[in-house]
Amino acid sequence: MPDIGNPAGFDVATVLTGSGLTLLVSAGIMRYGEQFRYTAAELYAIGGGALVAVGLLFGILLVASGYR
Image (cartoon, rainbow, N blue to C red; front, top):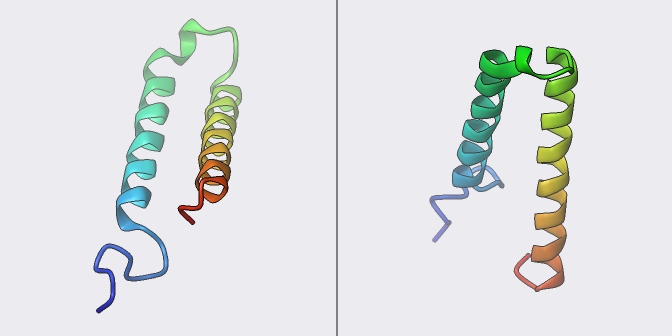
């Protein structure tokens, strides 16, 4: 029996959580971005880079511990 949470080869819960986190970061940048010395584009790049780094580290941790 196929895993209903993984119908397309990726975990739906993970994708939805990541999308929600991305929207929250975007909303925070739009709301509070003028309080930083960086432009909105730079803040988006920093936020995106941080999310990619966290995702890569988490993926490496999962592989190293044998869960993937």
